Image (cartoon, rainbow, N blue to C red; front, side):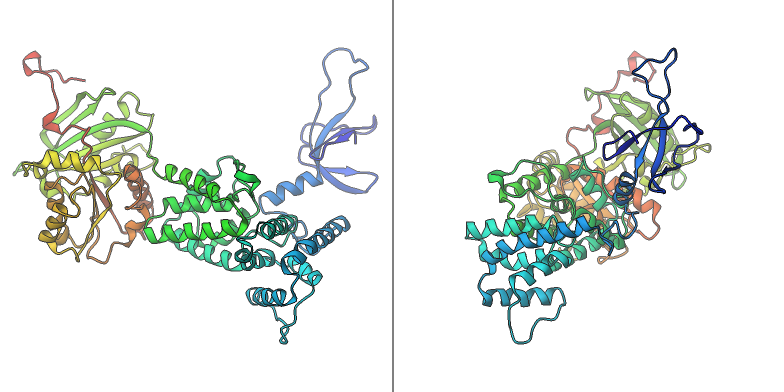
Length: 586
């Protein structure tokens, strides 16, 4: 062997026998001296053309040492048991563990020098770890406690959990606890979370993952953009059963690399992921529970509050994201009395980048099927300038009796296409109903006021407890005068009573499940975070539709009214003067 840098080894072969050649890559690297395979062959360094000089090498090859191979196996969770912390440990590893254990004695003496305090904390620790404690209340020695902390999984953070309140107002005690936790990072057993912290987090994440399998991978990717995530987090979905293993791996990454004040501990990567999960979680209670958990763990670790708040702010800004602005398409559907069932007449406009409209298609001359209309919308959206810059917004104006129409499921894929192309999967497909909206003298002013307050106002839940049509009108006139978002739950009859009220009174964002048979069938919509950042709602609805179409277990079919005041309605569009010709403008 010529040289080994801990990762790659360079090999200078003898001028006898066969040299490394094409096809040897991946083969075992055999050591004659050790009579064992010590790595893998990777390649050879080809001799230059022309005459040799004194600086040239003969038969130089390169490979990976066994240490590099084992590191890569461990990174993907495929290393042999003894490499992942099993019973076989080298003498050097054992000596290092013993040194760490000896170094723990000092801070333990400072924190638990009083035998009575040590006995109390040891009793609590034993109960958490399901270990037997002496019945006479005697205290273990500091050395015995150090041995337990360095060799028992989660023992150190569990003890720190009970010690943290004691040293909250004691800078010297806090420094000793930080020193103890730092030593724990050098052991294989300590982990980041206490027994109780770990149990609570796993339960919360399993519940959230069951309702939204993409939540944890989505949040981890955003929270740790420069980290090689575990394989289980690299996909789009995560099963609840995989949560414990994911948490276990994320615990191993202690710092997020961002600056912290006063040389305080860095925020662990796991807590950053939890903050991003909380920001994306639907439901105020679930979000609050995660943030309180994160704050408790951060305080126990000695993380400065400002560091946690900064990462929480990052997570909130990420959650308020929306898809990049794409093409905007306006569609108007209408029906004549003699038209066949499930057929509509369709006109389509495309908005130019400067906001001016261009008539893209007018198909009102004859009624068309949903598939035909979907193909027409796709052609307009994909053919527009900037079609690849983001997800296109398709705003469809429908007649009053078509608010429950399943147009998001209209499939515009051609016969030769391999993948379906439902409108709700490929576009931000939203509804509008100008014929209802205009049945109010104050409608335009109401719409503008509510739209401009959409980031400050709370979501109004309109279910069977709201008092029907009269109750909803009363709320929208008084305590919810500026409310911009209404979530409607209930049967088809109940929705048919409340939806017109929302539209007439200028509510710009209305969300409901058109497949819900009754008032108690609202839980499936929780996965799209209906109370989350409002500007990201069309994108969350699109994600939900993609999952729902692929998973027959998800019965919900969300419908979204989205009245952006910057988008003109069809009869407000400034079209070309007919006297200038019959050509369509574009």
